[in-house]
Amino acid sequence: MNRALIFCLSLSFSTIVCADWPEFRGPSADGISTAKNLAVEWSATSNVTWKSDLPGLAWSSPVIANGKIYLTTAVKEEEEYSLRALRLDAKTGNVEWDNEIFRQPEKVQIHKKNSHASPSPIVEGDRLYVHYGPHGTACLKLDGSVVWKQTLEYEPQHGNGGSPALVGDVLVICCDGRDVQYVVGVDKATGNIRWKTDRETEPAKGFSFCTPLILDVNGQPQAICPGSEAVFAYDPRTGKEIWHCNYPGGYSVTPRPIFGSGLVFVCTGYDKPKLLAIDPTGKGDVTETHLRWETDKAAPHAPSLIHADGLVYLVSDRGIASCLDAKSGDEIWQHRIGGNFSASPLYAEGRVYFQDENGVTTVVQAGREYEEIARNELVDERTYASYAVDGSAIFLRSENSLYRIEKQ
Image 1 (cartoon, rainbow, N blue to C red):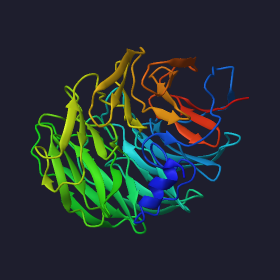
Image 2: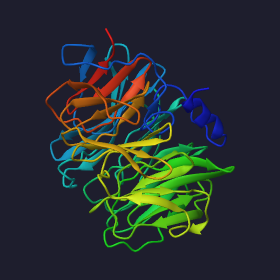
Image 3: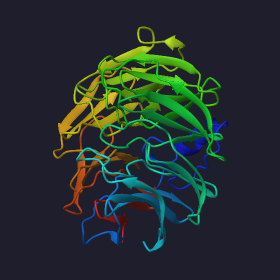
Image 4: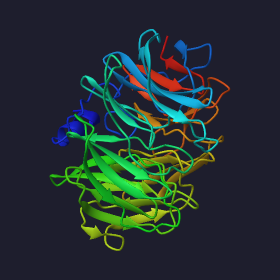
């Protein structure tokens, strides 16, 4: 039984359909693909089936269901941005619809590495959920028509970032602004707020950009929601806190947590990032009781992690790739692969795919020895979005285009 199916069967309280690539980091929310026969080598003239130019600018990652690709983007129009959702045919790359969902004033400031449409959508059944931070969240039918809209109020710092997580009938969204910090559960059918839980912290810098991770721990659903200075686990049905682990001073937290070897792996953000390994079976403040190990050596600010076969793979923003023992945190290997990194890596067929910010993918053999298999240069433009996989194809979003990469 494959990893993604095991994950989804264990989440009996969740209705996410485990097919295709339905959310940020795939069906198991951790960058693991069970696809076979993926390309290892490619270039602008090799193993690219199609390239489709995209309107606007966005760093949201593609999601895929039933042969259709769903994306968000932000298009500058005079003194406003049109916040849009698109659907493409996965076989041809043709755009089937491109609809405006919200409008946003131009005066909203973002970080130079961010976009106005960075959160990734979620597709489930006949519904698509799109999110643009405090500028709007919406549910669409798969023909692009709007079912509901909701606005969550907080003041962003550097723009929007984190994506929602879907569990059962609730969208869990982290709202960590420079003014207020809270987590909400939004009813997926109506858009109504089911619960809202304030962060029990008083950070000097409250803004963060994290995407929740959904777990089942001994029959108890948990939404793992990192924020500034602490990570919290909430009951996604009620918003009640289950546990938290403190990391004083951490802020602007971006990597999505992962789970493996019985531990939750969380990064702590700026200024000096750490990687924490936490046993999620505790209650209340678990900082002194359930933190199993931590390291500040080459931990990432932005890219999320990979866990496979008892090992954790990571890449720092400055291009240092590492492999750690999941249980102990001991370093297995570390290697400078070069470049700068924002996108999260992909694991498939015993390989780890690291994509830098300039269109270069370094493919590494997974395992206890560092072995580079390939280095692929695709396009000389920014590539901050993370991969998606459908069948035997990898989808890579650049600053201007979407590529379908597969063996020819």
